[in-house]
Length: 108
Image (cartoon, rainbow, N blue to C red; front, side, top):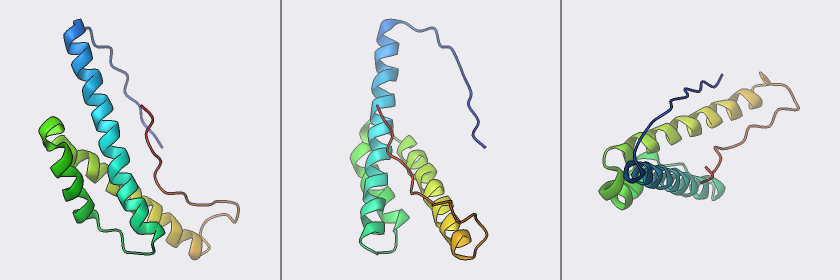
């Protein structure tokens, strides 16, 4: 179940541009950490959540600060959910037509 909160912000142009920049940078951060983890998964390696989080943190900490960790942890949560769905599929707990898919790339 997905939950969406809608909030209307009334801001000046400068604040709007800053928020837009943060949103774009956050999407880039998500996509990069997701790509790193996808590469590990495709190569048959164990997905190293700590290593990928650290890599992305070093790159984006100057803009997003501690929010980089939150983005990486949310992505890790999605990956863990994907892995649990694979396990459930292998155990026969899911319908045959259902195919677990890894987390997606965010669009800007």
